[in-house]
Image (tube, rainbow, N blue to C red; front, top):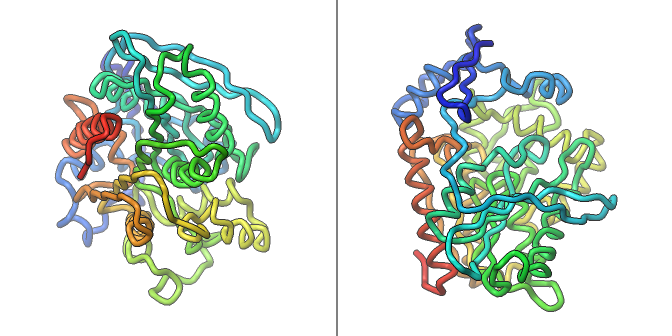
Length: 371
């Protein structure tokens, strides 16, 4: 593996051994975003598939299994500092990174829960997004480094993030934030965490009034994901209600097998235990006993994403329950499109998403109606 450095903060990993399994199936070429096709063809096709190895093997050389081009660390912000937040189950501390914009404050605050299937990711995963939102929306952004599976399986991540929300409210004065102007959001697994925490906020005593729950390509119902894709029957309309999971299951960048890999580490491989957890609304938000009176929601989906339809289905359930909900599907792009927001070498759709997010959060915290 060779490393080419664009700047001191922007390493690019180029894998020299071509992996033919990563070729884009011809059936997808017509609808894919041309920028993404070029990016994947030039840089992603050589990435080794993480779901074919153990988490221990992945951790030895994560660059080998990660499509990291062309990410960046994001713009400079006024202030960045880390804080230690107490969590339980078991009792420990997690790190939260606080991005504070220029100005006197107090500021609105947004808590971000990163993606990575509850197994991967950390404070560098979405740093560029956090930094950009801090500047563009003039808002404090708190990035939560919740504990990961398999050491900390379901539901640890959920309660780590809820502890971060509670800690943020309790420490609003020292953080120079408005405790009555809080929003939450996350990508993929972080989107599920966001969905669940909106319920926690509504049901807490007293209730936590959230300005917005921003769910980005969220997991909302993974009951269709098999324990193993190698010996499982293909998904059909009878076994899976989500067409995107059926027809996009062989995408080279995020196939159904990758979903299975993440889920096995998060909820385990014992079938009775999996069935119990997947029947728990905290793992499957579409099963929540009540969807009434939840915070305003915005759901982002990507056209070429196995999880596309489950996110949109959850949005429809929220709408039917009388909640304020908007949704936007970004055409032609993959599940993780939001990561590729480099100002020169990224995806136009990702940069558009970044701008959309800043406008949405500004409006939500200003009390404006968003659409």
